[in-house]
Length: 123
Image 1 (spheres, one colour):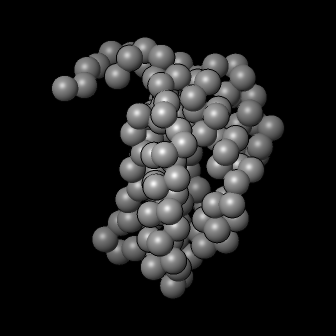
Image 2 (spheres, rainbow, N blue to C red; image 1 turned 90 degrees about the horizontal axis):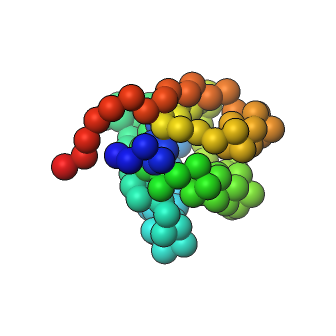
Image 3 (cartoon, rainbow, N blue to C red; image 1 turned 120 degrees about the vertical axis):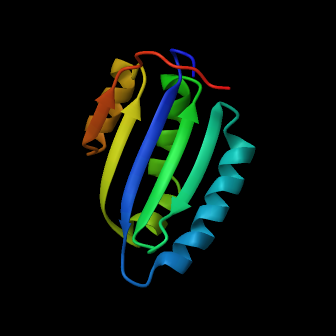
């Protein structure tokens, strides 16, 4: 990971009986983001074995790329699809989140846990 990259951990509780629908939505989201977000370096979605937690694990090139993705998600068709099938969420951003990114999160009602990059490597 470079010092400019932003890692995202976004965990949502799956509403009862909605896991199969979320599986389909996730596949659509991955396909669209892979085609339309070249600065999204990692975009993985996980469903826990008990199908109670939906987790997004993302890496964006920098805060600008994260803002681009966040804006697309917040104003796109998928936000209502995901939010209507989940309840409660935990959003964590890892890396040097810019003041603009932090402001965007606040303005859009997200309570974010921020962590600054300390050290590490990727093989």
